[in-house]
Length: 277
Ligand SMILES: [Zn+2]
Image 1 (cartoon, rainbow, N blue to C red):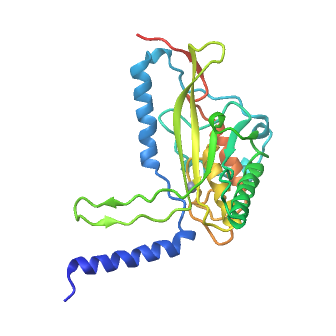
Image 2: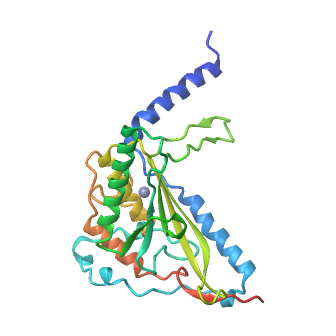
Image 3: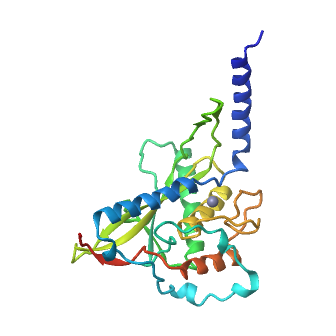
């Protein structure tokens, strides 16, 4: 006789199998609720450390020239309402070029075929960076420590969760990428008491996809890291919430949305002189 536990196990294995099979289709899951907490926590930390009146209020940065001259909004529309601000405001960059680090092979032991696959991954990611650099000034850097956005060739960790009521384990979905941000204070080079509320992005992008999908995923995730923290409901936008068999290019609607994001106020990128109450 089969026990319930065995039945559950079988069912779990079946689900695991399905999760792997569908990994190419369902991918763009982001931890937005968790991310919302990141902003709140950081804001609490700042207000505990500095007097609130010394902290910058949300303001709009001047548009980078590339977006200032972009005019299409009334033609193709946008999906700006889907973009979520953080507790510190919209995730806009204000110091250009935005510095992007792309992981490169350093392991000298790699076999020629592994090395080639790694290089193809790097090429695809850099192509995505080049595509976005039409709309925002971006620069590839070799030193990760100075990067605003780091793109790493790794599989996002699987995160299983337990349903507290039923005790069942929810099997994680295999994801091709995970993008997350963090906040930090940047000190003035000449005046360390002058600080700027800054952010950084980390993108983990799996090595397990074809070059075409690596490019498509990098394009999508970079869209998030450049400020579109939300998803389009339309399949032909690069920020569509699901991966599709024929990956979309960066669309007019993507750029209309990006421009609207950059027209929003944020606390990020504004300097203040650190003062205590
Ligand atoms: Zn996404």
